[in-house]
Length: 444
Image 1 (cartoon, rainbow, N blue to C red):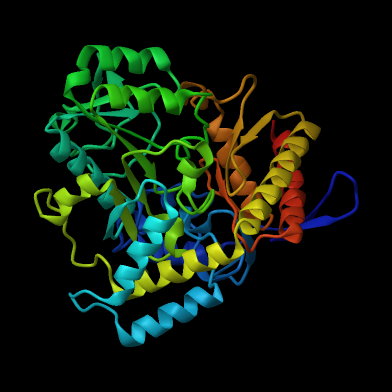
Image 2 (cartoon, rainbow, N blue to C red):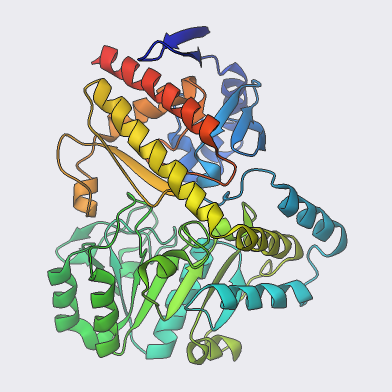
């Protein structure tokens, strides 16, 4: 079904489509043999149907019905240059035909390790892996191996992958609680969960158990459950706490690495951790990750005292994609990041204004290449508790209406931009947002 919705100023119309028949048919077929009809938990949240994509180019997706969308999902974060970037594609094609998976070392691994260590402040030595969850798991093992201590402090709302020991945001009687069936409570026995930006809480944890703390792990700019900045001097305070306790500081930069800047969140904040993890945007959509840090720590990995393995680590195709992606970003920096930040700010301002026109209050924040939006009656978002005050049901409906109007966003609230987004895509997005807020106002 097609119809048009007038823009507030009457200067343009948004074509609206609610016919997803090909996606609906494929989803019904997928559910017969693919659990939930999807390959990862978060895709099932899309409304009215998990969208089936036929192809992707630049800042746009084409679904199996042939409809084109402006894309702010960006593969849930990895796509930073734009879909099908020519230099990355050429590098992947060359690698696939020459050096795909040989179970041995190759020069590309060396080049990528050198590039990572020259780019990310905390990296003196690295190891390649295949996913963010795997690299986080290795970083935590390394912290425990280096310190001989059991405890890991993490923060409520910070996501560090789906493995048993890290998947938790809930706390009961001071103990971290599982988020999934099959996740044993004892897997979380040595995890402590702290409120983000809560100085008193982390001071108390170190006062009570500091001599048992192996590491503090954090998203230095929290991006998964809201894009929430650290409070002024908070990172520096945590950095000092870990130094005093002879514990380690781990930055999970799976989202922020190569997305918010070449040096990631540690480059923006000026705080250097002992160990870091990068993934997602380092290869523009190809599966690769890395963890690393100080040489004395990584020597434990180098000598197999801290075991890290993986059949697909350092494969020819993802390494080629990472080299091409980081090289392209380097050649275009800092302008490419300044441009994404500028467009992200224009988008944030426009979304807030469109919401206000129809009587809604939308909070939008983030550095530009990654943003988060919340429907909130009052207040801002500086903690996970404040994040939870948002109306997520209303936002999911907003995302559905945006999809009808030709813009694909993540139903949970996070937005990603790429180097391929431009003024035209931002304008199209704001017209779609005007339509979505207008519909929401009529549905009240």
